[in-house]
View 1: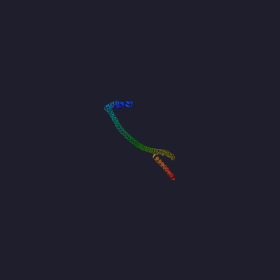
View 2: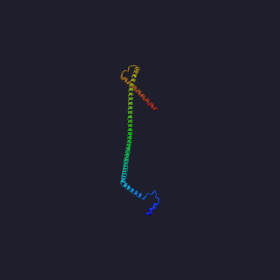
View 3: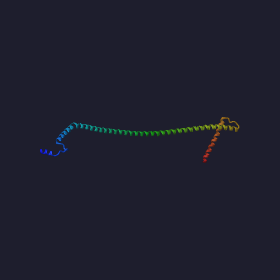
View 4: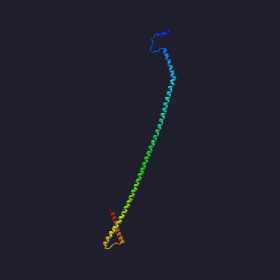
Length: 188
């Protein structure tokens, strides 16, 4: 051993290599600190990491559940929106059909009222024509009676005679007018 010590004494010491007793003491101290940390600190660190991992995994599961629920709600809203659109289209179609029916009813009512007005107008015109013809017949008869009385030289005041004379005169005029119109139509 003395040879080794002498040899060691001869070799200059390297500053990068620590002396062996310090290295041994350092290693023993390291293992003591490492053992203490492994026994006391490492379980607490692992416990905190496990809790954190569980929270993260739970959060992910909750997020996935919430996302699935949100997707379901979105699908429900889309379904309700589609139903609402179908209902709106159906209501629009019904309104158009009701509008068309109402227009048709109003046209029919307008046509019926127009026909009533036309019929009432024709009836009024016919009544006015008859009244005018009656009035004209009386006026023409009166004038004809006065003229005939002047021509004949006697009074034609007898009402029955006057009425028969007027009717005969007017019937002759109507017959002559009817024969003239048939001749005119035959000539065409």
